[in-house]
Length: 153
Image 1 (cartoon, helix red, strand yellow):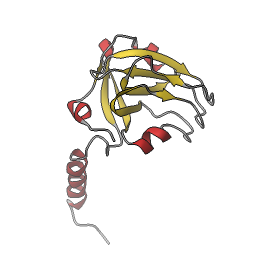
Image 2 (spheres, rainbow, N blue to C red):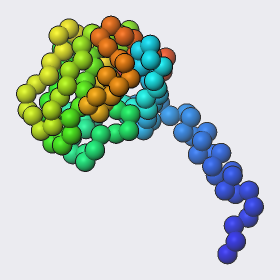
Image 3 (cartoon, rainbow, N blue to C red):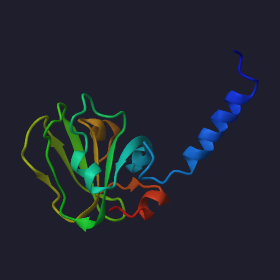
């Protein structure tokens, strides 16, 4: 049976409108600008206790962009690499999105990587991605207003 003309276009338009109404914590990815480099990453959001606890565990490869962890308020944040079979870099950020610490995390190593100051955000990316983009401590991460306003749980 042949589908009436235009139904596919209307369905696509409806999906786009529905997707644009998603909250950041519901979206699969969200765009972040990195430092002065102008590099934009599509990142997954981890804003709930469950999402933050799971992180990238159990994945076979890092996501294309990375994962942004959002905490309810600035706090000491600790990460480990249990069930993560690839190396990652992590950037800890303050409330404004300024990076104050970057560390390399080795695959499957259970040593905790803890923020040196209270962090509101942490960004995990594939190992070497920050260096490749020229991102360093002191750089701002350009967080969309919706992410800054997001109330993590």
